[in-house]
Image (tube, rainbow, N blue to C red):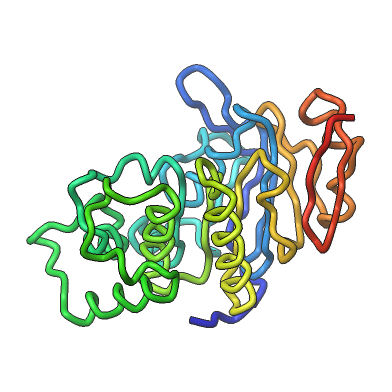
Amino acid sequence: MSQPRDRAGLLELADVTVLRGDRRALDGVTLTIPRGQNTAVLGPNGAGKSTLLRMLNGEFFPIRRPGVRMRLLGRDRWNVFDVRRQLGVVSHELQATHHGWLSGLDVVCSGYFASVGVYRHQGLTDAQRRRAEAAAGSQGAGDLLERRFDTLSSGEQRRLLLARALVHEPHTLLLDEPATGLDLQAAFGLMQRLRALAAAGTTLIIVTHHVDQIPPEVERVVLLKAGRIFADGPKDEVLTSAALTELFEVRVQLVERDGYFQVLPG
């Protein structure tokens, strides 16, 4: 499942504003994220992080006006289903939308179609089933395929969703608060799996408000606040106690060990 780590464009934004209701979820954002650069987008709730991620997934588009540009995968125009074949998505929200009566195999196979479950008209092939089983096995979820989704723990469900995201061998994973709701064992296991994927060449784009969900393989951090870029650059330069204190508006002390970061009350 190794992917080339080139620096082709993944997302290019120029002066992008996105409305959600009457609120500016993103406000004049200019940002370029190349493929191959593991990136974390960090900020408080309501900062615009999930909106940015959902733009990558083709769910939101900017307000049209002079000077605004949005390019995805190097293109000004794209087919959303083609995009979703190249980008795998894992999120707490996605976990909540999957029907409990679905089998683990149904959940994984739904990744082929960016759907919730698998339906007869979608024409699932034996080869696709085998690939789904292999993806689940690679994430320690091979024994979960015959079980109902609602009988599984949050950690087991998240492993199936990671397999779902990987079933079409995407070059990039989009992860929205990937460890939310997981206990320590499941969270640590997820982090190990993400690190292995990054080592194999899969690009990670992680959106979170938890510093400890940023694995050592992340090279770049983008800080978002109130829909705007607050800071952007190499992880070691952007993640500082002073920057996070201003970002979250609470005094913190940043601690680093073996490439992982944690915050303590300042």
